[in-house]
Image 1 (cartoon, rainbow, N blue to C red):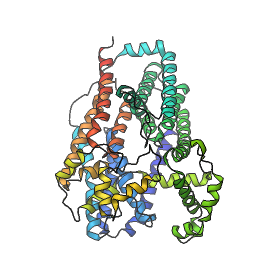
Image 2: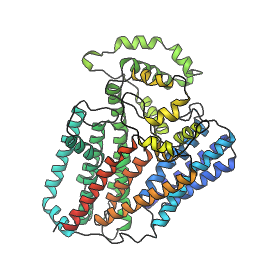
Image 3: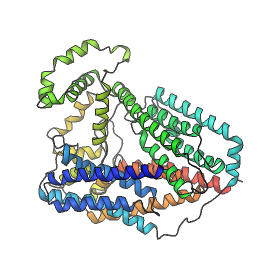
Length: 520
């Protein structure tokens, strides 16, 4: 049954890929050979990433590039040409530019697969550190460890939500010490996930299986902390843990037992919790992020979205239903900052989630924006240096958006003030280029290939070191590689401060190495 479900999802992916491809290549206005080759390269590298001796990092970064490049662009061509994704408005859809876009977009896929192949030839970290003492200690203190972790999650989650120490898109209203705010950020972004993956591995080492209590702990930690973070990305880190368990079972099936029914039931529950968390977080964000004026405007847009078949255009819908704003304004209470979110139908909320999935993934639109900037400006290494000089500034848009998107707009410098009128005082918005567009700032395709090659080899070696340091903990390696891939896919905001994220990650890995190496 387990094997057939995997076959089913694989078949479903290929059929979906083919349907989207056939619709997209017809609509592609460049030389169709370029789009065909781009699609072949993307599909080939994805298949190559699932060979026996592949790496987690390779799979995750290719998956995010697939979503942000091929899928996003192909869905646009096939189904969404009436609503261009943000950042690509300046791109000129000529045959020459589209052909160049396909070449540029193919390069990161080729460089990552090349890096994976070369990394297999590097003989570092082939053995692993095993420490039976840690497993024995865990067995003696198992219930204490689980209960303690549960209460830490509850404490961090509740205090973070109430105090707003670290939440997506919001500045903290408290001036806490670096140690306290840093500890919260570490635990919320990576620490809790690292701990849960170690607990799962210790369960497998001692009991040879994963019990229902551990599954509950894993789901609770992910759901509860993502609500606290106001994050809609619950499923991503959780999926990396599920995938690590799956790979661990395939590689160690002689030594561990995986209850496939419990495993799939847990995955289904996680998907339901993901949908629920998105609905809850969307409601919470609307209350915490936006002003009354903006919420009323969004309400009217939602009415148009829900009844889009009744109107020839969004403009006509907005004009026809203007009286709804006044009526809804009378119904809403905004006293004492206890704003009540406008009720939306469950169907509309699911529709908005689907719309979010289409626009959510960063990728090809940023490359299009950078290439469009190059029409009238020089793309050189000075652009890269300028990006690294960016500082956090809540009084203006971030560097990428100002330079590569707003530069083409008349009165673009006034847009921030207009947007700010819709936002609560502590809310801020950033626009991300992603690692591919960021490395394209110099305008050099060889530099893009070489940089992606170097970074991929570096992070694959780090993945090997994680396995070496943790007693071959495939679940931990999967989780950490996903953290890195997710970070790279959303790279580009104040890049000079990336040392905080990667420094914290390396510190965590080195701490695991020291414990496994020297705890006796």
